[in-house]
Amino acid sequence: MPVSRGSFNRIPYIGVFAMAADKFVLAPKGFNVKERVIAESLEAKVIKVSICNSPLIGALAAGNSRGIVTSDLLEREEEKILVDSGVNVLCLKSKLTAMGNLLLVNDEGAIASPDFSKEEISRISEFLDVPVEQGTIAGLKNVGAAAVATNKGVLLHPDVTPEEVELVERVLRVPADIGTACRGVKYVGICAIANSYGALVGDTSTGPELGRFESALGFI
Image: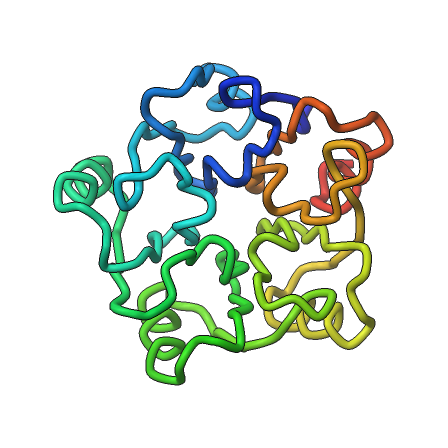
């Protein structure tokens, strides 16, 4: 089944603690993480690491198959683990640190929080090799927490506006739908990780919520 349930240390908010691209999944060190389940669900290499000396990988890093963007608070040892594992890293010097919450990315494009400067947007775009446009989802600046994006589709916060849907679909070049996870949580980005091959969603999510992930992310 392309969409599976899971948790980290019995916490269902998987998207806070991990991030996924088609080629790799970053998962926190020191957590009760079933690497085999993640690898089989997303068909990608699992890399155990911390970001900025924190297990909150999904909140602090965003990226696609070309690499990840995080703040310049990333430790040298952490960067070495990532680079040695084949992951390119941009340590962005910025007043913003929660890149995973503020960027929604796939291999075609990225939506960025309006709080980024033009220079920061340019650096992110060049590094990830995708067009980047600034915007909101459901009026929220933390676009990465409000959605889950892959190269097949996007699942969005259910309060998203038609104009925001149009922006997301145009920039990421995939169809979008709305949904919730973990029994009604609208911030789907904190509840799941996904790539082109599968998704791992918080284990408190209902059957209908998993079905919406399957449909929105192109697994059925």
